[in-house]
Amino acid sequence: MREYVVRRVLLFFPSLAGVSLVVFALMRLVPGDVAEILVYSAGSEQASVAKAQVAKIRGELGLDKPIAVQYALWLKGALQGNFGHSYLEDRPVREMLAEWFPRTMELALLTLVLAALWAVPLGVVSAVRQDHWPDYLCRSLSISGLSVPIFFSGVLILFVLVRFFHWLPPLEYVSVWEDPARNLQKIIWPALAQAFYISAPITRLTRSQLLEVIREDYVRTARSKGLIEQLVIYRHALKNALLPVVTFTGWWVGRLLGGLVVMEIIFQVPGMGMGLITSVNNRDYPTVQAIVFVMAGVFLLLNLIVDLLYGWLDPRIKYA
Image (cartoon, rainbow, N blue to C red; front, top):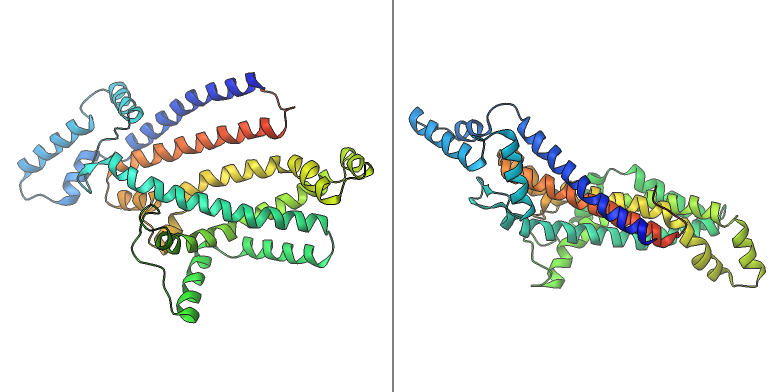
């Protein structure tokens, strides 16, 4: 187990280096000169002024250096938390990330908690009560979650709140450390809409895996020893059935960091998704590059955590 953990952790660093190289290369493949795009899209009355601005931006972005030097300087700065300067907000990119990232992570984690609290018990009930009315009810809920588009769920929640309760979530985002109650009023609704969507496949996956596990010999042996059914299900069967669920859930958390942009726009949550869309629309390339790199790094970290959870849930797993 120790060797598996060490090797998996060591594999994280070359993966992160590969991601950084891909992100850097993709930004350099953008058609046209980034500095010229930034200057001429803003407009300039004099050609000499525009040329001076282009030269200044190229120097600030390091575009006047060889590609290998550009990558080395950018990677060094990224590892130190220095992603350059935002031309849109005229401040360091890391200050913007420090504001956006906690908001998106809060929304993603709350979504995950709500989905897990909802989906796993429903999957267990559906498997234990197979072909009975609780099973049919749980399967109907999961199918509805898969069928309703995520943007429609968000708009529907807003419609219900306004039409039937005459209430809207607060328009301004407030940190959980400043006012937890007001923060929850803002965050809970997009989290519920997203959780309803991702809980559907988690419910179905939990049900299918548990149905396979409860037919195994060791589960029948546990029942033959006189253990109560709840102990057999939750202590013996569920732990082994959760391996694919953990994989899927970890993958979804990584997707949530970028995929919550729809919910952030509908409910006006100023997180990484809204920041990325705004930066792309305004050609703020240092910010775009930083956001993509951070999202990719977090996704790799989540994959590492999922692999380590694999080893904890099933000690038989070995590094291959």
